[in-house]
Image 1 (cartoon, rainbow, N blue to C red):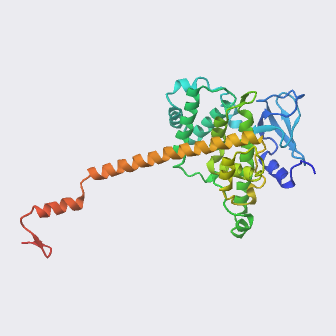
Image 2 (image 1 turned 90 degrees about the vertical axis):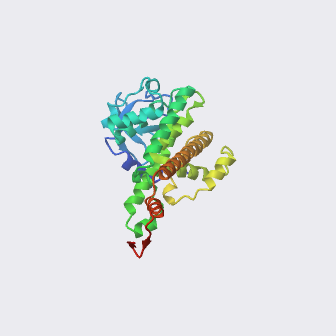
Image 3 (image 1 turned 135 degrees about the vertical axis):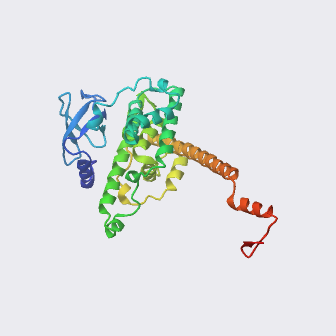
Length: 327
C-alpha cells in the first residue's frame, strides 16, 4: 500500500493551487534542500502523486511533496503590502482591540481582517512575552466580537451529504465546502509547524488563533474532531479531547480527507488551545449579553410609559370619563 493521495485529493490540490499561484514555503522535509522557510515561488504543475512543482524565486525547481512539506498561498495583491515584522505594534497600541479598531477605521473591515491575519501569521515563530500574549488574546476577542455580528456565509460549513446536495442542486456548495475543509486541515498543519520558535517549543495558542481567524471556529472544530475520531485508539490524544471529539456529529463525508497530519501530541495541544479559546470567547459574549440586557432594562425603566402617564392623568382628573366623553 502506498501513501500517495487519492485522485480526488489530487484534483482538489489542482483546484486549490492552479498554475501561477504564489506560495510561501513554511517547511520542507528535505535536509539537503537549499530552500528555507519564507522562500516564495510560483506553482508550475501538479503531478498525479500530488507533488507541487514550483518555480522558486531563488531559481530552484524543487517540488513540494504532499503530506511532507508545508506551504501556504500568498495573495499577490498583498505580497508587497505585507509587513514581515509589524515592528512595535504591541507598543503602539494600549490593547489588541485598539489595533483592530484602528485598522477598521483606516482600511475598512475586509482589509483590517487581512492585516490582522497577516499579523498573527508573522508572529507565530517568535517567542512571546506574557504582555504580548495578552495583546494577541485581546485582538482575537475583539475581531470575533465584531465579526460575529456580520454575515459570514463564506465560512459556513455545508451541513448535508452529497446526495442531499444533488437533490437540491447544491453540488457546487457541497464541493466548495469540502475544498474549504481540506484547506482548513492544511492550514492547521501549517500553523502548528510555523509556530515552532525553537526546538520542541511551540506557540500553539497563537497558532490556534491564526487558524481560527482564517476558517472560523465551526470548521476548525469539525476538522479537529474528525482527526481525533479517526485515531480513537491513539493514546497520544487526551481522554478529555477524545470525549470532546466524540460529542461532535460530523455532518458529511466531505470531512473524510480533511484530517490534520501533524504529530498527535501537537494536534492534541492545539485542540486544547482551540477549546480554551472557544470557552473564553463564549464567556466574554455572555458577559457582553448580560451587560447589554441590563443597559436596555435600565433605559426602559428610566423612560416614562405612555400608558401609565395617561392613567395617572385620568386618576388625577376630577372629571371622569364615561362612554368616551367628559361630563
